[in-house]
Image (cartoon, rainbow, N blue to C red; front, side, top):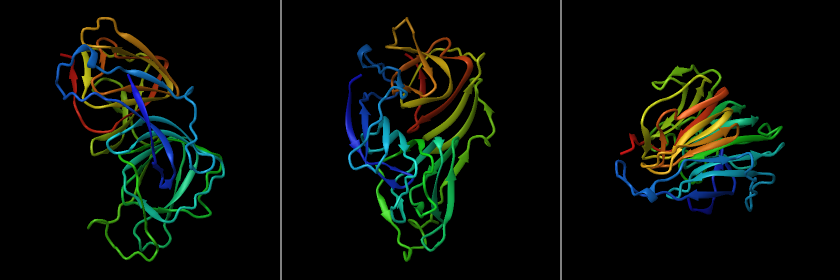
Length: 307
């Protein structure tokens, strides 16, 4: 699939930073259309382990990223972001005009959040591996000498659109945000969340659901197998392998009788674009210890049998 690159400026935890991203081309058919063979997208593996780190122009010193996806229509998207040890932010108190989530893979950091503009003290939220932080538009945050990144930090960083920083000085008078109480972010420690059994038989922790954008933590046990017809969806989704490995069965078009088995291991992403075909027999086949997988999508939609 042809792809083109473009720059964007996302904000990780409100830290304004210039990051570089790449947008994958998508085809514009509607759900339920029978597409010509050449117009089906392809499931593929993004190997973040071998992908080089990019140092964007004008980024804070030491920051690096690996782009996974860019939403061309909004400027949002998702990156793997590295923040170096001892980096201390200096941005003023503000909120971001964007929704997002951040999954911490390694390292620790913290940030000060405020319940309202009139809150002069705030609360220090600390983030560690295995936590999912949901940044809500309008959530006020800032920094101080106690907010540092002691050992460096690696995080998956997603926004629904290009964030815009809105300063909130300490003498700000507004008592509501667009007529509602000022929002406060949520932190989910995935270790504390209960597992649920899905209809397909794997177990899942549902972590995030905002305007059709979702995040789930799944575990596919070694003995787990699926069955069913070839499927496709009218939305994009990604599967980041946190640990373990699995094979995913994919096809190039509806008449393709030879499934391609794609092998995904720790640190790799399975990208399942809109109108790409998977399934038919063992859609996902876990290996060895099974597979712990973070699965996300950017919007709602339907999954359908291939016509």
